[in-house]
Image (cartoon, rainbow, N blue to C red; front, side):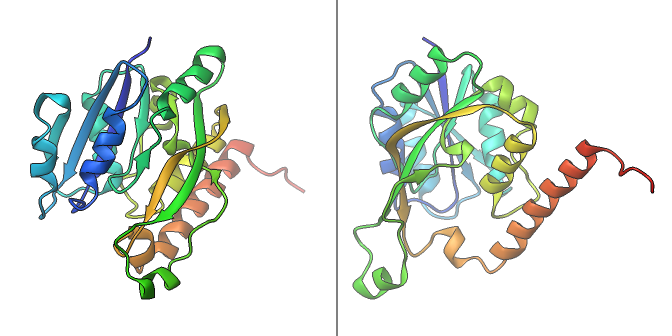
Length: 231
């Protein structure tokens, strides 16, 4: 069985971090190593991660952003397979088992991913609940929500450190640009939590980051196509 390295980046996520870590440690698949990268948190996130002691690897770095934290986690990881879990999300216990099963059966695949089910965090008040829009149907997760071969991550050059948001969108766009292969497990094995502090809902520059990711993808495709023929 191949070792799966699970990287959990966190910035001021002490409210939900333990639940995310527990969902990674409670996977039915083995072997798994869990690496938490505290990205300069000013709350209790680092202390929560340290409290797991030898059960996980706890890393602290100065604030560098989500992409930098994920890349740091990969740099110290040992697994032939990589998977990433946001500090406010959680996994179904069979998530890694189902994805690694698919990768073992299909060696030509670069990655495998599952469906994502969004849920509103239980502590959210009714007024906020009315403003938050959860997707009622499970939807395919972005590529970093799945499990990938280390070689594929290397070909992509890791996550962007230039974006604050849309890091996952950019990663999936570059995955598509390189025509890396992936297969979907048709089961909702990732639970994405919606709450008041989701970066995507509170950051004012989310639209500019999305535009940057799309522009970069178009530019890569233009270069790959080569110069336009002269008239």
